[in-house]
Every structure is written in structure tokens, then in C-alpha cells.
Amino acid sequence: MTWHRRNPGGVLTLAVHAQPGAKRTEVAGLHGDAIKIRVAAPALEERANDALIEFLAMRFRVVRRSVALVAGARSREKRFEIAGSAVDPEILLR
Image 1: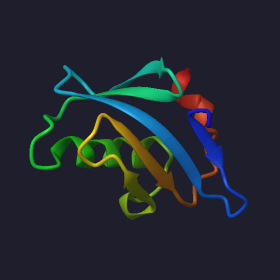
Image 2: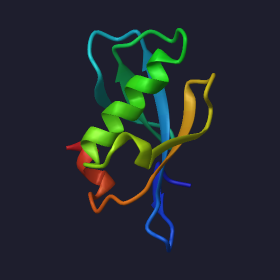
Image 3: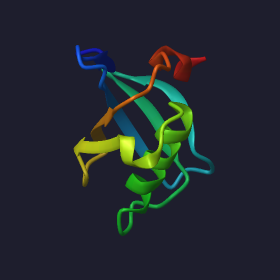
């Protein structure tokens, strides 16, 4: 899998490599087969995961409930599904 794919139903799947505790939340490029996102929130009490969901919802112009963490809740390697977005994921790298 590349870092993103869209299934026939329109749901977008993203492979994310998270770096919690950063100075600010931002995309840092690619990290292997994942997009690397630096997260300002610490990896305590799900704060980093919540910050990633908020960041992805904003970037893909969807409500928070349209973004689901489907794998990697306690890992740096995560997989998210985003429903209802027409935004091209490649825009994150620009």
C-alpha cells in the first residue's frame, strides 16, 4: 500500500507515521509507505490521536466523526479512514 488509497465507496485510507510532542502539528513529508505528521500534543491519554483526528478533519474538510482511527492507537504507525472527502490526499505534501 502507498500512503493513501480510496476504496470504491469513496472512503480514503491513510497510513500515518506520527511524531507526538512536536513544536507544532504539521505534515513532515513521507516516511516509508506512510505520511509523517508531527503532532504538537503529547502521546498521553489519547491526546496525540485526538489532535491527529482534528488535523485530518480540518485538512480534508470533513467533520471529526468522519475521521476514524482504525489501527495503531498505541503506535506511531497508524491507519485512518476518512469518509466523505473529495480532497486529493496529495495536497498534504504541498
